[in-house]
Structures are given as C-alpha cells and as structure tokens.
Image (cartoon, rainbow, N blue to C red; front, side):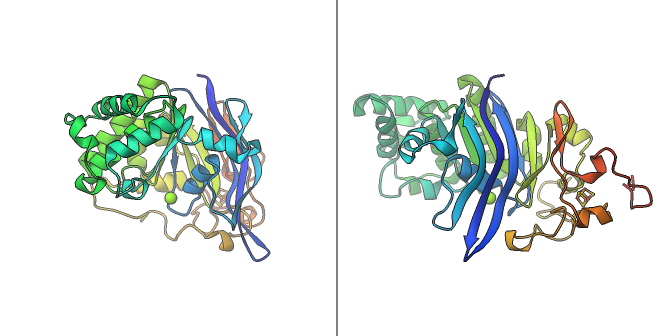
Length: 334
Ligand code: SF4
Ligand code: MG
C-alpha cells in the first residue's frame, strides 16, 4: 500500500550538561495505509520516545531530535514549523496513551471534550460536533452514547475511558494513529476488545496504526509487521508470522521465549537475564552484548548495522552479516 510515514535514521537524545545520551538511535521504518505496525521491546528500549519524536513532542528542554527524517506524505515533519505541527497533531496524526485519565480533563464532561476537539480541527458548529460525538461513541461500542456525552471521566471505567480516547483519536480521520501501550492498564478481556476495535476502525478508515507494546502476545493478533527495539535501536523488522516462525535477532528470540504460556504467569523476561541498558550506560559495540547468549568478540568492539536480510526483513546482528566468520566462536545452540 501507499506509504503514510517513512522514518529514516531518526536520532533523539537527551543532553545532561555537555553529555549527549541517545534514547533513539538510527531508527528507520515505514508504515503503509491500512497497516498495523507494532513496535515491541522492554520498557526503556526507546519505543515511546520514538512515538514522541514523530509527534515532535520530545520533552524539552533536555530532549532534542538531533538527526534523521520523518516523511509524512512526502513532508518532512522535522522541517515543519511548530504552527504546522499543531495542525498535524490530533488531526492527521493522533496518539493514544496508556492511561486515559491523564489525557482526559477531569473537570469537563466527555461531551465537552469531544466537541472541543472536533470544533478545534474542523469547521463545524458545536451542535454538529455534538451529533458527530454521539455517532463516534456509538462506533466505539457505547449503546448509551448520549448519556456518556454528559458524564465526567471519573464516572467511567478504565475500558470505557480508553474507548472514549479511541473515539476522540479517530474523530478527525487521522491518517496515522499511534497507540502507546493503549491497553496495558486494562484487564485482559477489555484489552482484546479495545485492540480489535482499533484495528476494525483503522481498516474502515484506511488509517495506519503504530502499536507500541512490550507484549509480543498482543502483537500476534493485530499487527502485520513488527519492529523490535532494544537500547534505542531497531534490532529487527519482520512480517509478524516470520518473526514468530524464525526470529533472527537474539533479542527477538528472547522476547518470544518470554511470552507466557499460561496467562499471567510471567511478567518479566526470564529468558533474557539482565535489563535494558540506560542511555548513559550503553556498552561499546552491540547494545545487546551484555545479555546476548551468542556474543562474540567482535560484538564488543563494533556496532552492527541494521541490514536488509531479504526484501521484507531487516536485522542488526553480526550473526546475520555475510562475511563475518563465526567459526571458533560461540554458536547458536539450537
Ligand atoms: Fe548478540 Fe553479537 Fe548479534 Fe549483538 S551482534 S545480538 S551481541 S551476536
Ligand atoms: Mg514506554
């Protein structure tokens, strides 16, 4: 399909005194119309900061996008004035966050907030906005949509609030919807409903979705493609089935092994000891070298590049670079 967003070599850093700490480093991927792309990785891998970079909402004054391009329909967002970005946000690109309580204003009714959002971006009256609001709430599954318009956020359950947020995020027919852990705070049944709803609506409106999650299990059902991030970098990109059948990067392999077999039995990566290195503590060479069961000497000296494996797959690992001799080194112990 048509490319909606094309991110090339994005680099976002935090600056502490004179030190540059990269939180997103050489991130490239693109998303097409009607497609759901998942970004997966443990917390601290740079997923959320990638999303905030796309929205140009990197926290100031310490954070800054220092390199790369973000083409949104052939327009480089990194070259737009703040005034332009204001129009893009919530309109052409919408974002849903983990905890809707922080995005919904507690002192206004749902209706107030929906009407406000609609009239801000579209040339319509409040009465028209009210009517559209009711329809939107019906679309996301509220049967009592009229009543919901008059409710305050705290009167709704977490799942209901998240559905309100989805309705608001989709209200202006965004071309791109970025959902950052949109269901993490919700119980499993509601999670599934919300994710299904998001996907159904994106197909209906032909918008692209970037779904950010630490949970590969969620991704399996919903995404066509997946980008795996680690230590601020993309370490693998693959069609979802191929990643599950044959993960190329040792980190992807670890993530797959950590999917709980029985619901709720595991909440951390038992299969990969250790934690994601913080930006001020990145190892020399490959960012994964401190946790990788296949690490070679070379991995401690040089940084692997993200390479095309075939037309649909990319991986950042010396094990998959041609011409790198692994003889005499530790091998995959399959
Ligand atoms: Fe492991 Fe080396 Fe590959 Fe990094 S480059 S993932 S350390 S084998
Ligand atoms: Mg995050």
